[in-house]
Each structure stands twice: as C-alpha cells, then as structure tokens.
Length: 130
Image (cartoon, rainbow, N blue to C red; front, side, top):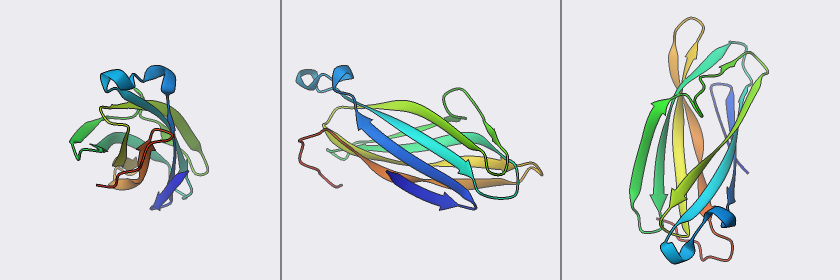
C-alpha cells in the first residue's frame, strides 16, 4: 500500500493487476487501484478535481484531468473516509501513476493534496523505473 498525507488529508492507494482484463499478446495490460481518502483534520472539505500523470515502461506519459473521481465530488467531514476503485490500461507490463486532488474547504479555500506515486507491475515482470 502507498500513502501520503497533505494538510490532514490522507490518501492511501492499493493497486492490483487484472489478469482477466489484460491481453499481453495484444500489448494491453490493465490495473485496478483502490483509493481511500480520509479527512484527519477539523475542517469539512470537498474533493473537486483530479490530476493523474501515468507513465508506462517506455517512458510514455499520459496526463488525465477532470472533475471529481468516479463521477463524484465527495464531501468529507472531519474523520470521514471516501473509498473508490478505478482502473488504468497500459501498453506495457509495468509503469507508475502519481497525481493530485484539488480540494476545497467550506470557506472556499482551494488546496492541492498529493496522491502518492505507485507502481503498476504485472506479477512476474521485471520492474523498470523511469
């Protein structure tokens, strides 16, 4: 598991390779990742948007931006956790992802929360760090 905390917002990530969704002969590899966002602070916050930088084993980078996560912009009161699962296809058997969430306090202040870098590795594949 990968973890980072920014301004009392903890983000945990657990990636898993999905063999049944992948087709190595076609150069398609698919991972799911489950993310748990916990508000450890005293202020209520809302997750407004996300940014991902996805890098495959060849160094090819894809950037993804958008509102919320999985179609939601969850509000997290102090002590609350929001968990979701999403997926990522790659053309190589390994890579990594890193990103940020744009959060907003009840008073309207926007701030950035770090999503820790995490590796996407097909089991049994040699890891490549770019």
